[in-house]
Image (tube, rainbow, N blue to C red):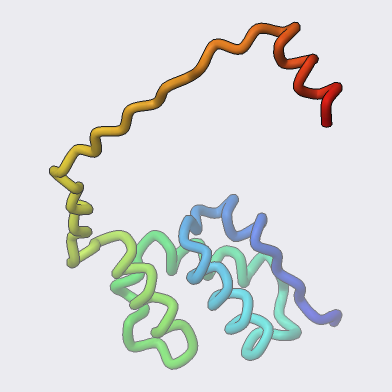
Length: 109
């Protein structure tokens, strides 16, 4: 059999949304399921994506399952950025310059 080549697009089609999980899945498959059938591997990865809790103890895909479960059930909340309360008082002044006056300045230079 040929070597299996997975692409990120294929994994996105079966439901992977996290780029780091896609990268990890591709690397794990390339290392451990090198000569397996592509459809079987995609089915297995789809099952892991749907129920990652079932694969925590798996020696090959345990790390991927933990990564997927963290992303589906985030435990940390992102902090909102603190905005500056101080306002800046900027005043812009524009001088009216007529076109003939501007042209006369250009001719002198």
